Image (cartoon, rainbow, N blue to C red; front, side, top):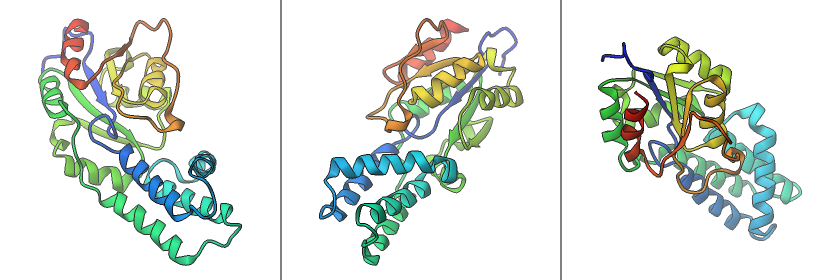
Length: 236
């Protein structure tokens, strides 16, 4: 790897819904949740109550399946005034376990893109969520050997990115973050001084929504990861 003359030496990727499918499993489970509690709340109302619980609980449980399941249970207790049956709680726990066992399916162009960029750049994975679940997904993805370092963090902030790029690269000014979340992958990476590349995928979780940054020279948006090597070539 020759990085001596490059402006951009380190490229970091988000994991969920950037490298592999993830959000669709949450939406499938939410649909099952709505069906279980259809006698107590309309789907739209239930979704609002669940989102409010998730927002409240982020500081307690963090991101990931376990916090999502606990928020569903809390919401079920609330909307039924404490009358939710034990078998329903059991089915919610089973739904969460199903999510933790779902097979990993890479998104299009992921392997070829990461392999191409790994020839001349340090490649990082920076993801948030439950440690064991993220480690499982990375192991099953078959991509683990392509990353020079992996950081599983509780949240993504400018300070987190600055620290990761200092530890595993040559600082944020020579680094890029690529992901599907404007709020977590792009804006804090830009604020740290790195390039931020937005690659949208599906319908994002409501708590990950943010407006695109304005007048930020290091911000780029791509339709898919297939365009990333070409973009990187223009920056090098």
